[in-house]
Length: 155
Image (cartoon, rainbow, N blue to C red; front, side, top):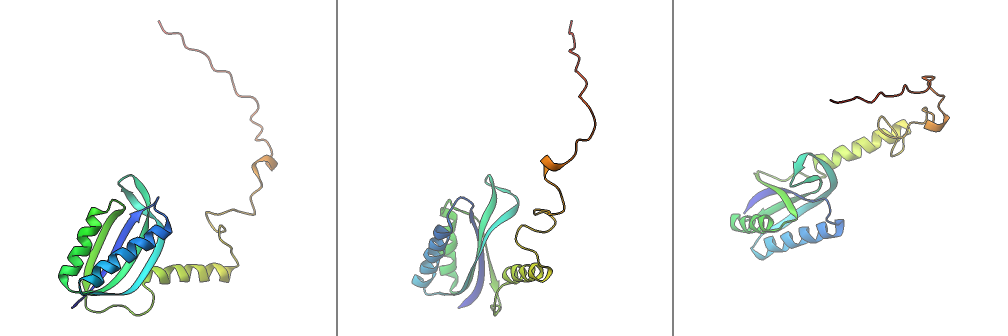
């Protein structure tokens, strides 16, 4: 049997429990057709680089598969029929990676850096800044009243 990695994107309005159910559904399709599924990772809800079918975000999932080609083809066929699956990519690999995937390692590394700097979630360059006063506490700019607009007369 051949080794595959399958990454698929699921619509943003689907709940995380429904995502897990879809993963289970495709796992059973593979096992019924003589294959097996190794590592399964749910990468969570991520922002897409561009809109796909009017969706700006999607749930990402990865499956390591050890199955014959017809089993993988049947799984891909069922993914194409499901309206919740936006995109799928199945790649034949020589061997599966041990440990977490690169996407999971990246998230762990970013969290570790935040903890080392003493930041909490929401802090940082785009989060809540403690050095900036609230809008109501800011002094007026001193521009004075705005000039009145003149109405144009059209002839």
